[in-house]
Length: 209
Image 1 (spheres, one colour):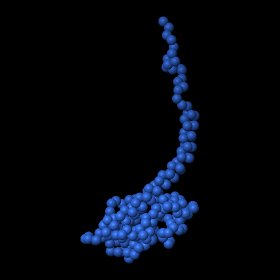
Image 2 (image 1 turned 90 degrees about the vertical axis):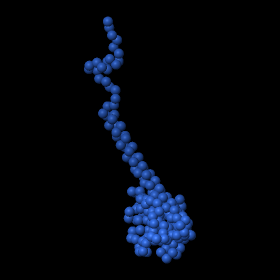
Image 3 (image 1 turned 60 degrees about the horizontal axis):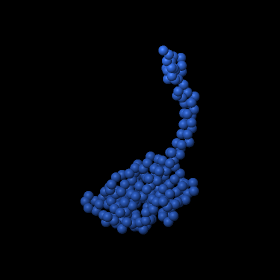
Image 4 (image 1 turned 135 degrees about the vertical axis):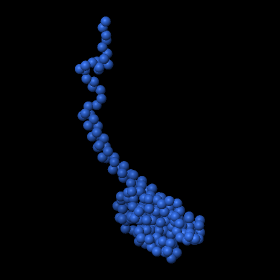
């Protein structure tokens, strides 16, 4: 009896090569295409992630500043947004008027993203109708009234107005964060208005966000 020779029988027969799959040349060509695409895509991805981190940090900083203003009114005392420029952290604190008297931390301490820093390098002027000269807010004071090095604070009185060490209303409250060529500024005007700004150092112009 004879048996029909099927295609799958031929594939199993000795000496007959199965040509399914990819050749080495095809695999190498595919790898080259993927590497070339990655070379174009990755820089855009990093730039996008950097911009997203900066925007998120700036908005969190603005929210923290607004929260400090509300805490001052709620406790009928002073409250502040405390920034440590070196460790790239910020938090809200309120002044406790009863024993133990001093600054009390409200909530958690927030750390900036790894690619974001407290800086305004590249910007030569402050946002319009804010500070006279661009600068981070003045340094924080400890419970004894002594300056804390490497810090910046915006302090609000119980009416929600930013004040200096002598409790005089001040328009100089501002924080600046930067990544790549973009700067965000959070300002607190003498009347208590909190605003978020963006600056591209190439054009060096501020725009409200």
